[in-house]
Length: 443
Image 1: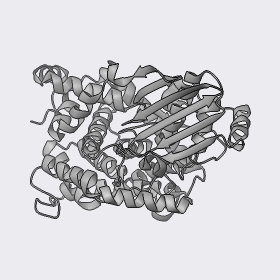
Image 2 (image 1 turned 90 degrees about the horizontal axis):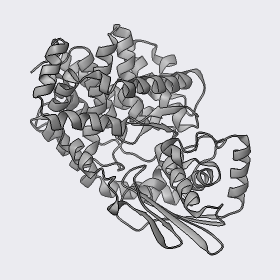
Image 3 (image 1 turned 120 degrees about the vertical axis):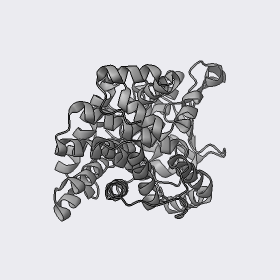
């Protein structure tokens, strides 16, 4: 059913009839996902764990041992930690969190560092207090930090996602244990996977925007600001600026360049925050900025933009749910599909058109590897947006990839499940090999 032409009363009536679990679940997902972060979220999560460990210890540690999963090593190796004057890597993230991090700010933990703090961070690093090792467990997202001073010690573990603190200890005594906490998000993670593209489009049609507009307005404001910064100044490989210089400012290219410029800035130390999606700033910008660019070009009403952003954000989350938080599969691909879906909706597309756009985009781009956070992520962002836009334009011209083409099968949800299995299961060995090569190169 296409609900886009319904008036306010009609939308409200449909929302009353819509399964309440789906409606409230979508609201909860948007509130859980659309949160601000400064810097690449993996080093920031390390800094957050370090800040929590120092707070638990109650003093500046003399020794720090860090054990992280291979995917954390991969995503922290090459990216600049914000507010550190260009420092990279796990020791820099740990030192920033310990010396000057504000654990209460979570993914903005390093946002208040000043010049004096930077000097202290450099001195702390020079003391050779921090040791780093790869953890032996199977969890792809795992951060464990043990700190000590004299006879006292503390331990913090974050696992599964960037702010999912599961254990805090002080001198061997458990201070916090997630298994005994009421703060459990497993049900929400399951909902993200079970959500369907049809659910998402119907929710976008009928949602009372007053429940989510503050989140979406912040996404527009934050992500637009960092993209403008990336287009104005020379960050990293300058992918966004080069796209404009080489191919001009038509809306198609501007959508790619704007998202890439945000990544240019974020991967290379820009101190502006972004609103993330699926735990990633790059995915948050990829899902939102192309939709914003197209809405401005079209002169779309604000309400239409907000509903299109909901489609893009939730499609991104749904696609990523079956893949996992970190893998060998580039997360920007999911967000590029989301952006194509959001722009399709912005142009008046119904569920069928949105679904075909997603399938087309997945057929084009699935399988791009993730070899860590770094400057080249901006180019992958541009490529992912291109796939979403090509998928959209194909659909609008009556062309589509069909079930039986490669890993595609009939039905958008079946194809999404196939892609999830490809990324989560089929690319597991690829992920291990990528990590092996990157660790070898560190040495």
